Figure 1 (cartoon, helix red, strand yellow):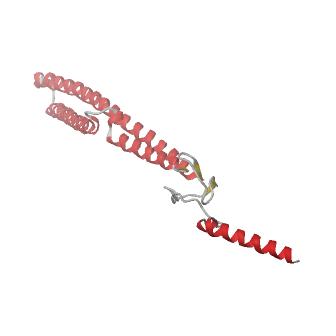
Figure 2 (spheres, rainbow, N blue to C red):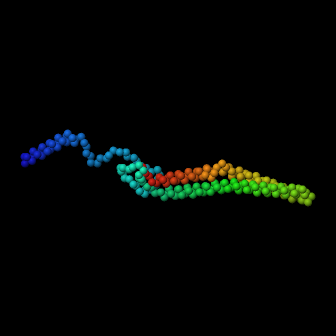
Figure 3 (spheres, rainbow, N blue to C red):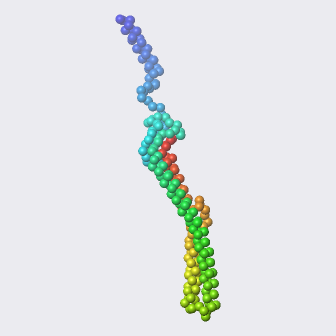
Length: 195
């Protein structure tokens, strides 16, 4: 038993000398982490989480999909903005068409004025055979035709003010609707967050 005790003491002393010379300089933790950047990830938009593709402290690479949010509301918003854009484009096209309509109304009013003036001249030339009342009616027809021309010209000026100097695609209302659609599309794109 003495030899066994001497072997154990010698082995212990040898290990102690080894530890003191080499091993004491190194730590051996059981739950150590490698140092690295931990970056908090937040969503640009609020939403219901459908899937998480990374775990806490898991290493991820740039461009890797981390989280998916429910895109239903964002898709509905995009669809709504597309409808708004279509409605706005139709409205602007109608304004362009109104310019042509107002030009046609001016032309029709000018024809009516020419007819009323011709009728007034003809009745004025035949004073003796036309009653004073008929002359007043002819004069009123000329005045009414002149007023229709002024109204049509005012409508044309108003219509031109809304569309002059721009195409449908350059119209401010259309451009605003396009910007709204782009914003809704960006929100939809945020439903899949990657790093």
